[in-house]
Length: 640
Image (cartoon, rainbow, N blue to C red; front, side):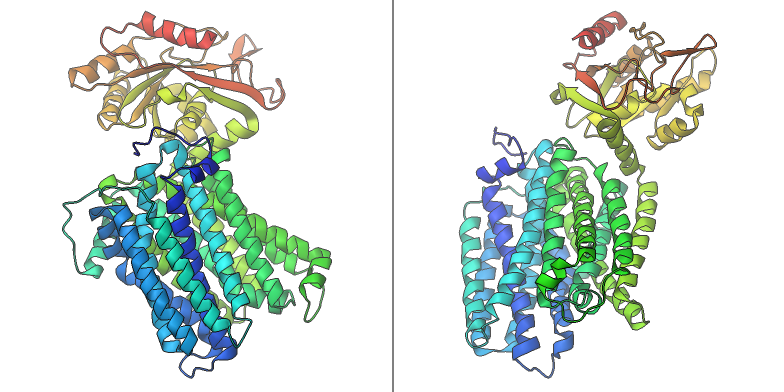
């Protein structure tokens, strides 16, 4: 964590702080330079320079493959370097390499040497390979948990805007056949120098594992990194989810020129417009993550993004079926046709959804990965990303070779995304649970948390809350950026939907000792193990949902957990919490039917978007704590 005491008020405020602004400028300029070089070289060999060994029709594919190759070969080594050395010093060394590469590229453009330029593409791929693990390991070293989503959103937005500007600049500069290549060379060198100047202001970032012994064999180290990532299943499956997003996006990005020409009947300007719409959508989705997630790492946005990716990819297929026939449509004619706006809306919403999908996943990996291995795990992700992008190119080529149309390829990928997302969310139910919590706190209630700074960022804690409704656990889950394990009445597991939901959370069923002593004992054993593991444990000590809205007496079980933890030497703070304004809602037992208090019988009894809040108190020491003192702390919060 950065020693800088200031915390940015929002993601844009980070641009005014040294811990982020020079880093952002460095990565932005590097991404722009990568794409300026690649696209200008592609235009050169496609339209101006005939190269026998690099045919124009396959130039873009081969140039892209050469750029990706270093990610497969050297990512493992790059991850080791990022963990072992100061990240700021490593960034400056990488930027020095970029200056040398672009000086060679400038000469290659001036002399029109395709072989030299292809070598520079490979070397810039190596540059990006070295920079990638540093980039994503730098952020959690300088940003707090509440800033991490916004910081990743800014980086993701900046990357796609840089890709867009690099491509556009490459095309515009190369439009002058006589002097264009020389201008591109000078532009590449200028961007490299500006990037190095920005890197000079990046603050020192000490190594996380300075004693690491470097493994010179990239293949064995790659395998070791993948095994290292598999050590944390949530992190590893998130890496797979990120790689799938790159698979999904690569299919669309690679087909834009052909899609514009063969399906939309547009010219090169239409293809550029599609790239602009896609890039702006990704950027907008990335920036939205901070506000939609209340400045936390909100992985509940991932299922929302996955659904949007599939829905709008499928609708894009149907939108193309109603396009007017045409040939050689320019940009103005394209925009004048109303059906084309549906295509652009689908692309914009599809890419916005991809931004919502990817940013929380990146932030989760950074937050949950072990700091000493973080860069190597991110390097493993870069390897997977490269392999998935290669696989997407092969699959798209195969489907097109089999006679599929481009819209049919988009439809297939959209449906495949739905299947992959469902599989991932069943494997890692935390994503699905956080989505349910996000929907409840954004679309059912207007949820506000007060005193959330009292929730510990690390280490075990016992959360104690009043019990007002059947969704109390879901609301607590939404308030905490960390997973919470709940100790809950075994009766709630008999309710069909809620029981399934709480089983996914690994909630611990507890029964009265007199009724089921084995279940009672097992519950307390599991609760203690949760605290031993350094996780958050939540308990509703009233023993059941209130039937009249008042705070009931606390059962002594909560003290038993505290005493057993202290007996083992565990320093576990007890954090009182209180849910307010929830009594009388659909999920509370306010209705009386046949003499019984029941819930969930009148969905709109209080209308929609009722304000509900959670008040978090200061931690209480476990020593000498009584049920009365704990109940008083919760009562004072409830009445505040």
